[in-house]
Image (cartoon, rainbow, N blue to C red; front, side, top):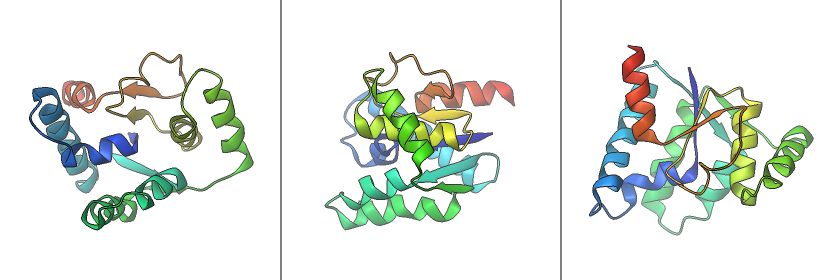
Amino acid sequence: MRVYLDNCCYNRPFDKQTSLVVRLETEAKLRVQELIRLGKIELVWSFVLDYENSENPFLEKRESIAFWKRLAFCNVRMSDAIKEMAFEYAKLGLRQKDAAHIACAEYSKADYFLTTDKKIFNKPVTAVVLINPIDFIRRFSDDQ
């Protein structure tokens, strides 16, 4: 099983944890990372993640997120094919970076695109399953 986590997902543990949903998403995302470390899930990384992470003003957060690049099964690089896919996704109403993330997930043949960004879920994307970390863990646990 191959997963792509967007920048929102990587940053969830650094968000204010006062909301129950945020805490649950954090715990689910940490469980996903544990499954990656155990080799049960393949992680996809991309140039979009590199770019967004480089914009993070907090060194500790940048380094913590960048660590996951080393554990990635593959690293998607910019290409004309990805640009074209991202352009098509943007036509669906996705923001440019979100469209690029999803294009990278599709290009890498990821099975799941994990995000905590609720604005993404109502878009008609079919090439990859758009899913919240909580729902992913629930689904993945059911597959065991």
